[in-house]
Length: 200
Image (tube, rainbow, N blue to C red; front, side):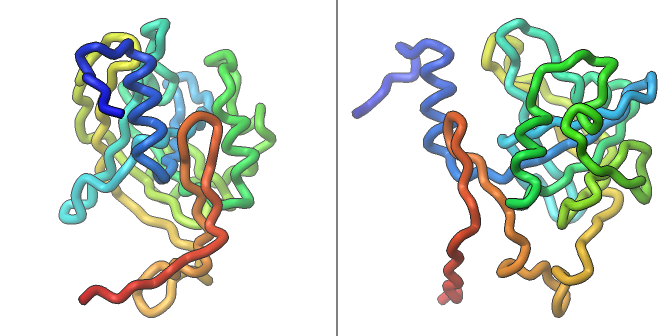
């Protein structure tokens, strides 16, 4: 099948992108509001934008109601966040934090998610996350404020936490990191099998 993008409705475009560009890493982003409410939410349009300087990139898809999510509001207010990496043991908790709850309620409390202080920023970190990137806001780029449009957020990495047993010979052990990927719709991929191929 060939789909002419100019003839597609917004949701059809979203489903074709969301279902084909997979699996995607998940940025489980914790922030703190100006009123000191701790927020955390998952984003699967996420990648590395630069290694030197270290910059992460995630995209917030514009909600159909046009209202920004708490993560972006908090970043605008405080300029700080933590990108927590999700492993299989955290998958259910992560899913719980995608619920729509009142801005004055913390998703950490809602999901009964254990937190810990961060090293260089004020938002909390997920205690059991195997890898965490503490970040400050670099830039916000609005691509489109239309429903299912997008806002690109660039984050400067200020500190990186790696669980002790995962850091071996100067690299993060890919056999044991156990990261989860996002597929289309409500599907996720689990790290049941990994294949190493040496570059030619």
